Image (cartoon, rainbow, N blue to C red; front, top):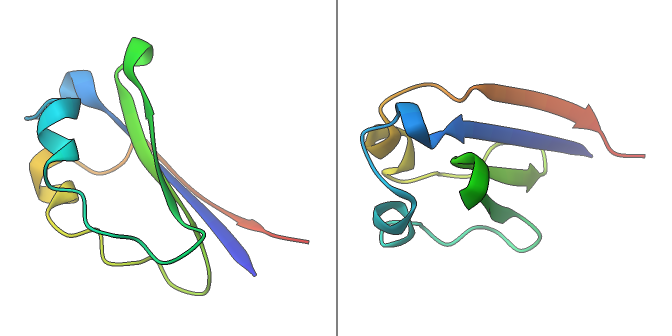
Length: 74
């Protein structure tokens, strides 16, 4: 199994965390949206062979994730 972590810096984005929350699509069971309001960071942790559909989130953020990593889950 693969774990993927994507993290965006909100201070560089075109939107706020509150605006993002209004547009978050549902994720498959086990996948989660994550946020660190103090650091203005937002992301997703996903498990499985493919990244789920992130809906409008990448467009709303206007940039590629600052962190995009894959890990083997043992």
